[in-house]
Image (cartoon, rainbow, N blue to C red):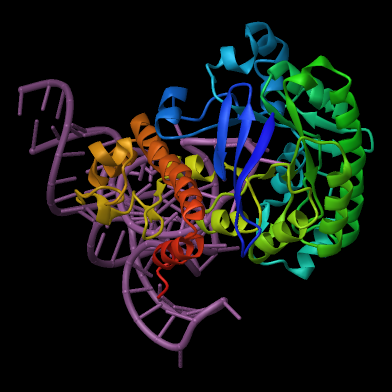
Length: 399
RNA sequence: GCGCCGGUCGGAUAGCGGCUAUUCCAGGAGACUGUAAAUCUCCGGCCCUUUGGGCAUCACUGGUUCGAGUCCAGUUCGGCGCA
């Protein structure tokens, strides 16, 4: 993998670049489409490519459990197995320490609106007590979400599985903490993640796969400036090919946290912001030095009836759309908008037809993927701020 | 005409003497950020001084009872059977 920076913005941390992988280039900034189980839900990979996606991201934990990483290797890696003939990423499985642990247990998300002190006290003590996950120094013990069987991931095992899956860019094994975790716990988890990063890197470098697959280290530290900076220094000094910024955020502080980190990370390597992708977050991330994003939001909310428009999100199942014969977004050039109306999509949801998920996912992914492309273009033209302001003004209905 | 069975929210249901009448569907709204998500949450009689409170309600009328959707009688509507 190689990363070339084409242009740096003078007035912010933003940059335009190209990541070269064995399966093609990614023009950055870019939105990476999530296909956890080696499929983007409701879509064929041809549909995903047609809407403009440059790369895909799958998940180590899910593919290890089903169908098994050995099988994917045997099939000819993920490129052959699932016909993903474009650049690909795999997440390390570390996020599941959070999503199947404390997040499930306490029903909290990774991005928090309101950090309440009472919650912090309640949750800090039981941070690792999720029913499906146990964390220790060596690794993480999971219960399978499929059959309840017990499985263990260590940094070495995660990398081995990711080698078997064969994505172009893979991630070090890390621990994602709850935004409600105490400072002390965030520090403890961050330090563990650093030790795991070193082990992930050493294992990776010892294998032949490291010549084809790039390994990104992950910066943690929650929403605390000192921890984020310490994590960026520690991970940034290691010989990774690029970096992921992970963990939990206070909704208001995502961009500042990203900025703290990117001021420290080496400039010449790509930075991926893990799991963030609301329109406003894309602008905030990019101007703070993020090169790639992945996020489930466009596809998940699509399946649940929420669709992006230039004027904000709409819930297409609302009764007022049942006889609305306009496009989802009047300015959208996606396949869905060029062929179907709001009324039709609304009908498909009410009738519980599968096509609702497909057409909605195409639209939302197109919206986000191409928004990032527009942002990239605005950067090349030196009009980032102008584009950002006009987009967000309209999207958030603020005048 | 006689007999039997039944009428509970828009639909379908639970409840078989007790305190807040259940659940599912349809309907309305909201949530979702490295996917246990085609998922989840909330609303659904009326009124008020609405973080609460009050009054109703199980076809209708009357009765038994401390207490009735529930038991009894009649009425009414519907289904089935027999003439």
